[in-house]
Amino acid sequence: MIKRILGILIPLMTCATLVAQSEPLISWTRIIKPKSGKQEQFVKAVAAKTEKFNSQKGDEVIRTYRIIDGPDEGSFVRTGLSGPWAQFDETSEQQQAGYDYWFKHVAPYIDSGKGRQFWSTSAEMSYNGTGKTGPPAYVMLRYYNIKPNTSFAKLAKQTIETSKATNADFRLGWYRLESGGDRSTWVFASVFDSFSELDKGNSGFWAAYEKHNGEGSAAKWFEEFGNILQANPNARAATIYKYRPDMSTPE
Image (cartoon, rainbow, N blue to C red):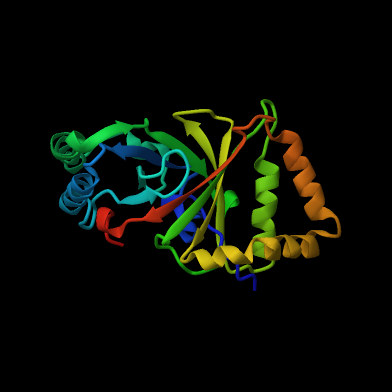
């Protein structure tokens, strides 16, 4: 069994449920930067809002992460669970009350916020061999921008197929930005509970990939990937999120 723990995009770490849902599966994310000197007040306000409007059975499940590196370090990410596009057709009274509370009690502590983004995945793009579905302590997101008129889906699916075939004990997924930014953007996220896990790297996965798909298959995968990746400094980026249970729906 491969011991490197990999994972899928923040709120979508419920791979065991993906097959039963309609596809594509859509989730949202929003990055929020607190005002300078007001982070403590912001954290308390978000925690209070979440407890009041997102903590009971039937409430919208929201997870919160703090960005701990990169240009958005110190900002927070709020995310929702995956589901069909239809989930955004209507706003419940509870949700509207939560929005009103947010603008009155949380917004005063916000410096700026990036617009909401919608991300898609599917059962073919996700895998969970750990038996875990809850939020991890940390998530590392790897962003890639693909060239126009090319497709990354085949390469992404190959990693999923290998994970299933080798019964790997990690969870992973690929996600494409559907709206709210550059639609050439794909994301892969790895999850971990302690930084010491990063010392293991991901060589174990690629060794298993090579064994399952034949000699030279890993090199071929990376060659094809390099050919469709945009040639600019923004085509590859990574950042780490730390889960904040005090600001999230209890799970």
